[in-house]
Image (tube, rainbow, N blue to C red):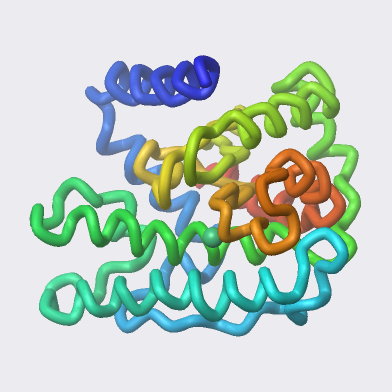
Length: 248
Ligand code: MN
């Protein structure tokens, strides 16, 4: 827990220190992230898209019932709530999902929390479905090298990710994020918060809410995390990484 807090605090501290050139950074960040995936640019009314694989395709690592419930109930509820919140705010209808999340503090107090939770829930799940795939895909030498450079070794990266995922108290997410320079780090967020509000680009995420694993694994979060490594879509993650560090 201590190390997670450290990560977040480091990020916040560095964001504060660089606030003098915040506009330039923000513009760069916006340019880089909006190109990562089309769903960043979706706006009201939001809708639930089909998954690119069947609900049973991630067996035995994630079971069919969990996938179906997670997608058609949990993810859909975030989208329905988000649309309900926005319906009375026509000025926000053209705001993209990325803009809603990265400018969260500028919205009216009465909808800020709802937006944060439900736009976050929609964004986080949209990314999650894309960074996993049936059978996973091998990691390239280039990306493995970047990971080694940042964490010491691939195993050290895995250990740190697993540790963060296991020790995150309550509900939340674990993320592999990059800054525009390509420096990688692992952070955790509570609830449906995500790295966009910290001006970091997520390239890999793991949902550690109980609804993501409870039907198959019950309280054994560690087993779910261990099996996650079998279904990681490294090809997609590398595409996101390259787009995030593309220079303008
Ligand atoms: Mn979830």
